[in-house]
Length: 258
Image 1 (spheres, rainbow, N blue to C red):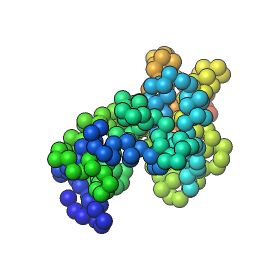
Image 2 (cartoon, rainbow, N blue to C red):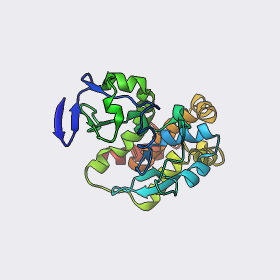
Image 3 (cartoon, rainbow, N blue to C red):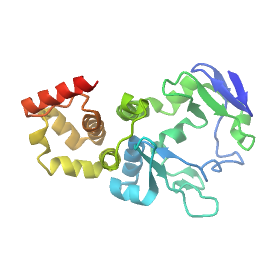
């Protein structure tokens, strides 16, 4: 552990920290207000399924869509319009969708410093009584207890897109492609209607097993959505066109520009 400044500390995976969030603490629920919670596509998938509502209804009612400097859509949880701007999913007894809460809520108060996740920042706020509870953990153990591995696995395809060298080189996607990313990855029900209600499978060379998987499993559908977005944005990945000549031209163009 190393101190940064103002009660902010850096930890490695196996260093211990002291924290526990309990409903007996006087600050219980107060951290779930007036805060920006950025949602990944998998967060949206879990949360809207927990509520049993379509993705488009969830996005319209509970989120605000923004654009990053690189053109990648940013989806933020919409807080209630009350004085304290509380989370819409917090009740007197805590989170009402606790089993499907977002990645950032699961990780709190631990946050990775970089995509490599070699160091983690913890800010020991005086107002948070959780740091006074004498319960220790390591970052590795904390991540295991919060089921972060599942979220990290499901977010891997999206990280592959957002951390692509295209963006690392300072490039930006145009508005049409931003909408494609949003409609494909976040509004998953709309994406499903699109691929099964069009000539999609006449154009793309998709095996029968994959088609069945994405028809019946939304997690598989989301993984496929990432693959299709990567193909459309960068002409990379493992998707192929049924038109072999067109596919060869596309692959040759990609090699020439890489």
